[in-house]
Length: 283
Image (cartoon, rainbow, N blue to C red):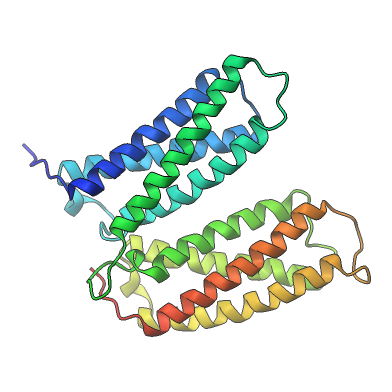
């Protein structure tokens, strides 16, 4: 019979809290919130995905199956917790904006369900932030790469890039000029490489690279900073300067993309700074 192992009690209870909060959020929303459409599906996906992954982590750890898992267990749980933090945070912002604001014709019961889902989504976000804080590597501590600051920044970079992809594709806002297509290429290339790093670390495949992993991270980090710097400058120039505007799009989306591009540039810059002085051991 497998030995049931409990991690540090604080981390265990934070995960249990996140599990309960996400379960309540999507259950209440699906049961009586009377919602539908793309944004509703996205919010429910955020909560359900986070719930399922947290349940998986809890089951594996409580039954001591980490050694049998086909992933690096020093990287997998914190990667899931970081993605769950960002997903629940996005749902906590999107859900009230679309389903609580200016909803005069919604029944009181449906509104109450929506308020409950919003509150528990916010609680889940706080719980996942707590899990990330408890799981991340401390100075001088031997840990997996994803538990370090550069590893967590990689997760944020990929998430921000996904949001950018959604905003620039509906409607398509990057095909009016070659410079904007370059910006899209920057988003795609950097997203693919950042996601490749996450997959390599979680799958324990960093040794498969033809060069040392640390050198790959430094070279890629420098390249990404330079590429995002160009996109941070080019995107607002070719979108907001009347000389280059060929069509009219939703300005709010374009402004948001410009802000997110600058945000990702700062994330890549911080990533490069951390990577330049980080000495880590792959566990």
